[in-house]
Image (cartoon, rainbow, N blue to C red; front, side, top):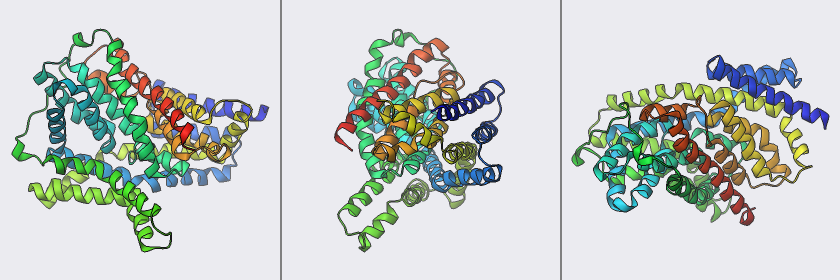
Length: 445
């Protein structure tokens, strides 16, 4: 028992070192993650001859499953932005649902964009549109910002092919189709609570001033943007392909060509490749873009996410160090002496890492290395464990978190108002999401 506690102590010190390097000394995330990972490796007694292999394995395991998916995701988001598909989705959903249902329309828009783009990209695309909508509807802008952010952060945190959820799916060997289906059950009540209901408990929403940074988006003419049907199919296409492939596999024999083809086309990489090609055709060539213009947009998209990829790779090193040192097994032994649900424990661990590091994907990847052994040891459904960690990675954050700062600086609001809005909606997202996972676990094993 004492040895297990000492092992956990060194992990805690390693994570605190990570926080110190990122927050206090402003060391780049990549260096901070590698240094912290090496500290844990030496402190846990990992043989020096094995550390280099652990680093290679950690980077390789994450990049092999995420590299193409992240790149294709960036390309799809860029093509949606450049073609005006994002504006079409927002305009159509808002017009269809009407003024009374505006918050619910924005929940849907935020979720769609959060699923299909990096969070920062989704934020920068949707917020000017939201400000436009708020002005036209004569609604205080923050009453529409909150549901949009609630949907975007939750959609980005729990649905593949976004980096954090995809890393968790890979680490827990979860069925990706089941993740989508259970994820939708989790997200609906969660974002209604965090995006709509909490507004009744936040005083002063109508009086929050809007700074000069975030400007309304210029409107494109209807003739210059794709149709709604074309625009909406692209962000949803990966989920449609994966779920259909899973159903086809369920209904066919394992040695049939249908099963083999469904396994091929239903993989995350192939489904994203198909979606990227369709986006190029519908949003690029069909809209009159030249091959060079499309290529330039793709290059710009890939360049924009290079830093994200490197940080995720460094997070993979820390995860692999935790796995190779056997800390996960020691946690399983300790948990075996308590009555805490493995789902709750996984959520708590992820929340703590997110609070300390301010990095959603990093907290998900690091927590995966710690709690992965619980899936087998306690016979936990891998999809539910994945969703518990995903909800934990989307929680209340502090001033050193990129999402927090992007939100606060974009609207020019005070720290107090940022915690009242961003902080509260993120906490509700995380907590209600966990409650939904625990509820589902009663019926799904």
